[in-house]
Image 1: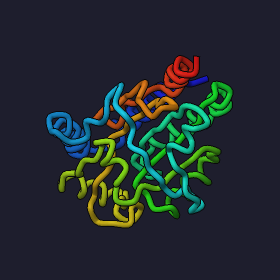
Image 2: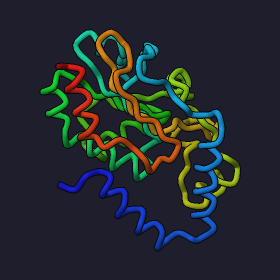
Image 3: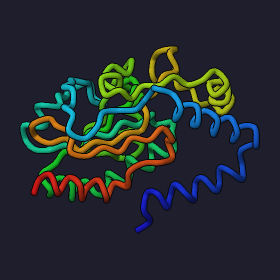
Length: 216
């Protein structure tokens, strides 16, 4: 089976062939600026995950510590259903969902999309795990993951029809850094993978192995 990161590499090659040099330069510049800023650094191993209650794609509330009462959880923050890398990541998690459950864990995916937009993502990708809506990036902010898109990149996104403001239901043009955590039953973070570059994400199969360590 092709891994998520192999899919990423193939997509990146296709993107490089299609996108203008100016667009590629601006996207790289935005990542570099974010890496050099204080935004989006995230929580670390050993820290306590903030509790939260968020609506799922159907509008039903999901509480983190209620989930943890049953066992450890993988919590992954993604940018939105408009992001091709996010969709590849969510599908990769869906492919190993049975193994996650067999290891005693649950999977929670969080984005700043509205519940309606989250529902579209969930249905489009046939996802059977918690897909939660963090409007306003409140929870992402508690996890220290929020960053602002620079104006020049907002213009690029708009030109490409990536209407992040419509998906998120606000005009802030803020997003969470792509981050994945394995959280123990007691709420402490056992594993984290946080990168400013949205093309650099933890391989779901490797996150599964970290979950198994927690359960063991």
